[in-house]
Length: 337
Image (tube, rainbow, N blue to C red):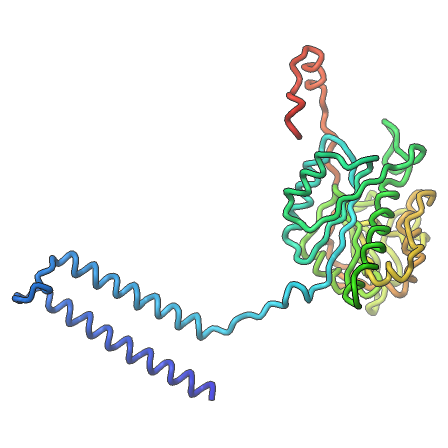
């Protein structure tokens, strides 16, 4: 039946094209002939213009017919995708807005993403509030300050104390409260990912994690003093970890190297990050309450592709700015950077 319809459409199209073409040829033949009819006394340029319009119309119809013959690619409805809830801790510094801009413009390309941005602050700051309102993303803006005894002091190495603990836990708390109000099974569909604001993310990473059943894992580039750290996969199972520091940890992975099913987070309300965990054990403090190592789901082609990088923006040097401020010539503080 479909073949007959296709043949019929093709026949009609050929006949129509031939008749139209004959009409055009006849009209062109009449251009140089004398006629008493007022209609045929039109100047040649106007007649040519009409013929061009007719030609363009026929070309448009040809394009529409060709388009109609091509099967349409069916895209899954947006609502059928699992939501990726991304929890990001952030804190005030000179490069904060630059980091958030880069990250948000990656997220804009990820369908069905909900950004949970948590400030390390006793209150929501205008910079972050205004930034989120203009971001074009679905978001939740939270804030909770880091306890004073857990804050890094000026000159402390970044590894001395775990960072973003209270903020990630606040994001988990909000998710558990918010999902309670969602009716039915759909309220538990989704994936939770912890994305720091200074990392670099491939769009492919988010599609990899979207099918997470419990905890999915993948390599992270430029971390731990190595080109990459990664789970090692044999026979589709994680059997050990490629890492240069304390591979005996329960889960020797970077924060950017795993995602957790929302259903699993909701089913384990006490699972959280331990701010008192020893150095390098922060990820393990959450995961050990959710999953065992043999239940991990390797992604990124069995953990052979790097789709996220632990990049860091260099701290800007402000010596000239400070010198100008002493002279009263510093940059306008009203200009948001």
